[in-house]
Length: 388
Ligand code: ZN
Image (cartoon, rainbow, N blue to C red; front, side):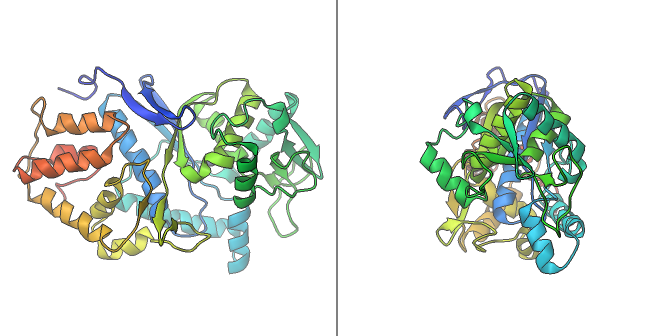
């Protein structure tokens, strides 16, 4: 059998906005948008988990016979990268270019499939200006203090992705760079679409004065430019659900009058020392460091051993366990196990069931221990056993 002929049932996938596992049955071409990196520091395991999850999803959709168009942006201008460039005394685009190259290197080592398109925020300034014009024209935004703000009171579906109450939204916005104290906002939950630049920051001309884009607008403008008004699936880390994805959905639907996303999929956080792995806390495991000691395929297996919706804790056993698993699979006889009802079918079923990579790995363990070939099944998870 060839790809695309075997699956009668649609795959099922948890949708954050719906709060349940539902069928995910896109057309022949699947449009996916994943929030990419802000290139100011090396790739840590939390990022890797996100991009490996969408990589396995892409592989699985292709195995089911779909064509995938995955867009992953690069945020090469925002508060974080400008602050870091200032600290280092380098131009922010030089910092972005260097860190993007390191990210590409890590992704290549992990065998992450190339994305269909990887646009940079600074490539999208005309699109962003046009997009803000659409939001203003439709009455969902206002100008104040040299900036443009989205007016959440005008958008009734605000909360459709995260389903948080107002207090929780305010708490998270304050914690995640939402500038809730900005005196020009009519409501602290309003968010900036365009902002004046500080004297040492880059600025672009606009109808509303010179400035730079707000945090959320780049993804909406790029998703529209690259993929159209409604996309099949939008992903990212679960810490992006609010405010980032909530604000993206609001401004996109305000601008186009169409649904923005059919399916929201979020990767759970990887924890270390009891806290989410994050740049701000500094509790990070870098992919480039792990690669010095471990086979990149073992790094992939370490991540995929956990279901994407389960938070998990990094500890000293993670990599030795994953390396041991890789050895078990490598010890299995080479070749394909294509028999109906065999391990390959069962791995496909596990991935159909809310992308259960953890179950898929256990199935391959059992098959390898029973002396069956696991090469094709491992390849579905992006693990190339043919390589020495
Ligand atoms: Zn985004």
